[in-house]
Image (cartoon, rainbow, N blue to C red; front, side, top):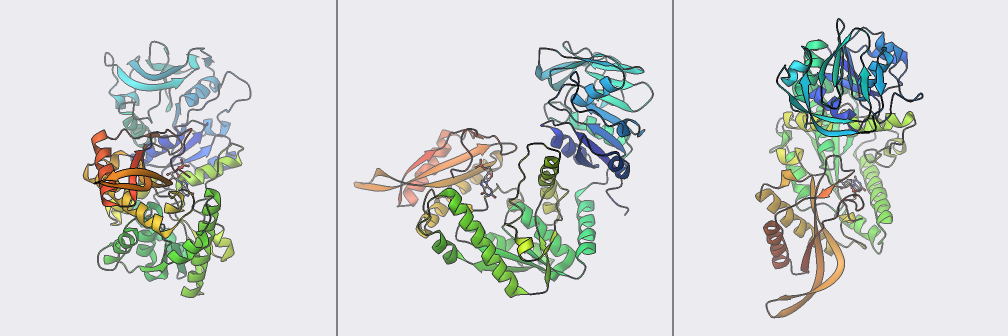
Length: 527
Ligand code: XMP
């Protein structure tokens, strides 16, 4: 097989909130693509040598002087170009047309009608007399076409809602094909990526796995590799992938810090055991470190959330480093589950944008401390791709589609001081909530759900006895990116059922509440 990265698209980011979605849709069509800032240097563009270019939307206006422009090297490439929203406006303005500010922002569903035949818009089933629903989000609009362009679609408020060159493969769409509200928008991007740019569509789970295995083998040779396995999706997929690639040269360290969910340790051990999990076909060295007492004693008497996070992080590093050294001095590599959104966000910040660099995958400077080089086999994958290859590698669905779980675990879900007793109670309550969500087929409908242990006492009556015990809060949220979220509208009967079970089955809980706060202003976690 030739290199699956050879046929690729370049997505130039003009700052749209949807840029990553464009890339995900293109990848879903089986075509590899990368996102880079709009102002990348010319030599990068030439070395990258894309089969086609997509220009993203963005918050600026081309009617002002100092706003982002398409690099001349892109326009001179002689490869297909698709401009979306701001990308279309930049094309129109730079190729000799005109863009006008409109004081009326068009946001939401819009109906487009065909103005001319278009190979690209065929994908939307757009034809004369057959209007289709698309998603708009813009203020400016193209008011005059550049020379040699035709308008291919319009809406009532944007007469030029799509345009294309009469002889070259240059297209612009004012609407957003990447969002699901644009029906068949994914088809449009697939049509551009495959038919128009000529990419065969080799970016599939099977090929990605094969390619990643080859890359890891080339990178680490016969060296030993260490992985901190948390049981989360990313590190689990790294474990499965590396064990395929290098077999018993991989050692996974799983730290049981006493702040895990119920049965988490046994689930991870089962998923990677030699008899029941992916380990079935592959030898996987899994070392579980029982470190509950060490974590609990260091957390003793500490109530401040940030202080707790720091202690948990540092203790993890100490335990990991100690065990890693005990396992072998020959280890040269540390594997990490860094994924593509982390890479994009870190890179974008170099260009002066106010992005927050996520460092949670880089466990507290461990690579430097232990003098280990990094292996990051998921660096170019989106989360949905990580899940696909996880399934392909034989990981159980329950693990691959698991809700995220914070690094400090139950440590930030027991408010205030952490104790083993509180962790045990919370584990039971959380387990009741999560298993009932699964029973009711609600688990996959919420993005994250969990229980929180509140260190307040509340009065209750059980039978004839007065009970004065703790409170559990239930939290379930719906979110796309975890930056904003709203509380899930779970059925009342369901919440009541969970509440009854928790109060009846756990004697040290007298009351259950449901958290309906949105993020912002609240956060998802309570600490
Ligand atoms: P918040 O509470 O900030 O959470 O709204 C957003 C997402 O991040 C997770 N989270 C963490 N993950 N270490 C992590 O690895 C942490 O310290 C941490 N704090 C929050 C949270 O579970 C949610 O998915």
